[in-house]
Structure formats: structure tokens, C-alpha cells
Image 1 (cartoon, rainbow, N blue to C red):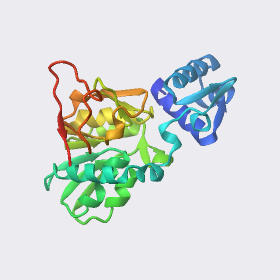
Image 2: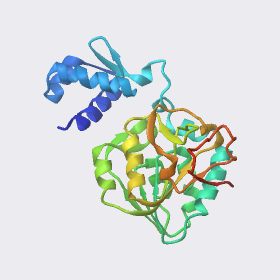
Image 3: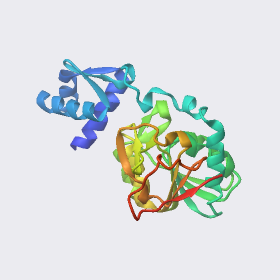
Length: 256
């Protein structure tokens, strides 16, 4: 097992059981306890687990805020008006017959009711998207397999990333937990970051969907810079100090 695969499996184990000891992980993954300790230090540093004496605990049981703490249904209800406006603007960019990729974010999922009557191919690792479009008569859904993250209704991991490399899409629509003033796009869940990067790699054009509260929002993991996106779709023009891009770098901002 590669180290990255082991790291993902360790995080999944800790989240499933709430905690894990170094000894148990060493036996389960057939590596030395020293290797497991190094793994846990790395995962703790990235925020994926919380390091404790003798092992690790699920960060969702700690006081540190993480994206996984709030379930998908809870997040989906926040800033619902802004999300609907952003979704409507995003859907206006899509033509019938397009092959599109939809990220796991709640703002992206808000596009689904507007896509149900369209003729499209949708590539996704979001169970919310799959459920919303499953009965749409002219929507073909390509499901990216992987490890289930039930709290946020998404599929992640090496299987997801491998499946992504097999496809090409006309447009990708991604969400974010925050955008730094220098244009760095952020996320708070380590397992989601490689999937987001993969979506950018396989898309001809890509749009970032973010309401005004995501500038700066939150997040401690860098996904990419804004220059990887064709445009930013938001509900309000960014304040002058909210987005200060490097000299010579321009970004198309699409508003409702």
C-alpha cells in the first residue's frame, strides 16, 4: 500500500471509530509503529486527525472547526438565497449536450433542480447530485467511485482520483470554503482537495462558485490559485480589499 493510500485509510478508520491507537493501526496496516507515528504526525499537521498520546482522534470530536463537522444538509440551508442566485448564473453558462463535472459543494448542488430538464452528461462524486438528477430523463450521470464520506455525501480517495483521469469534460463547477485576498482557493477537508484538483485537470473550462462570505471565508488547505479558473461566479462584487490579484492577473467575475 502506498503511503497516500495508507493515510486515507487511516483517516477513514479514525473517523469511523472515533479514535485509534498506534498499535492497532500498526497491526491493521502491517507497518511499524514508528511509521504509524510519522503518519499521524503528518495527518495531524494537515488537520485530518487530532494527535493524542498513543494514537489519534477524529477532529470532529475536537474544538477545532472543520468542514466535516457540519453535515451536508445543514450547510445546504445556509445562505440559500445567494446559492440559488449563483446556481442560476452557473447554469446559464451551460449548453445542451455539454459534458459537465459537478463538485461536492452545496452551492454546486443547488444547480441540480435547474439542470433536471436539460440534455447533459454530468460527471460527479457527489451523492447529493446523483440523487437530485437520478430521474432526470435526459441527463446521463457518470459516477466517480471511491471511499464514501457519509457526512458530506461524497466519494473520495484514490479510486475517485483514478476514475477522474479517465474522463474529459467541457465545464467543471467547483465550490470552496474560502478565497484568500491573493486569489488562493482553499478547502478544509484533506480528502477532497485531490478531487478538486483532478476536476481542474480534466476540464476545458472551470468555474468557481462562491458567495460573498467565502471572501475570505475559511480553510487551511490550498487547492489552486484563481488563475486556474475561467471565472468566479458569486452573488456580490468582491470588495476592493477582498481580492487583490497579482499584477497582470485578471479574473472574470460573473454575477446574477
